[in-house]
Length: 99
Image 1 (cartoon, rainbow, N blue to C red):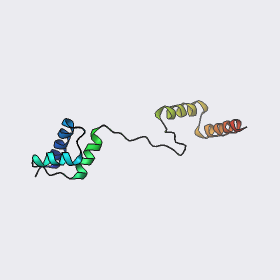
Image 2 (image 1 turned 45 degrees about the horizontal axis):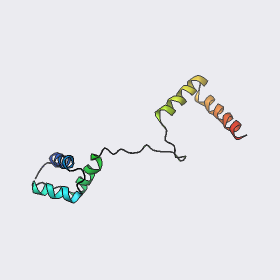
Image 3 (image 1 turned 135 degrees about the vertical axis):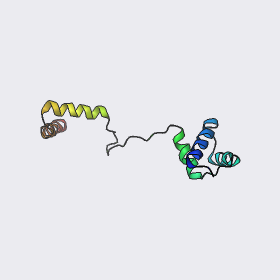
Image 4 (image 1 turned 90 degrees about the vertical axis):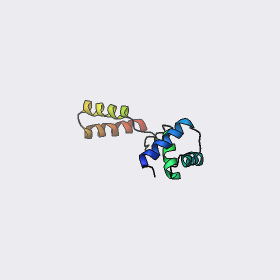
C-alpha cells in the first residue's frame, strides 16, 4: 500500500494530465496503478488543485476589511492622537452626516 504522500502526488499528477477528470475517473486511474485512495482524499486534492482561494471574511454590512482600510485608520489615529479621540471624532462625524 502506498504512503499517503505518494497517494497525494499520484492524484496531483493525474489532475495535471487530466484537469477535468471526475473523482471516479481519478480513482479508476489510481486503481490501475494499484494505489487505493478514498473519494474524500481525491475530492480534497481536486478542490485545491485549481488554485481556489477562500473569500475574505465580510462584516454584516457585506464589505471586507482590507489592509488599505486598516492602514488608513492607523494613520487617522496617529494624526488625531488616540483611539478614544478618534472614536469621538467619528461619532461627531456620524452626527453631521445624519443631519
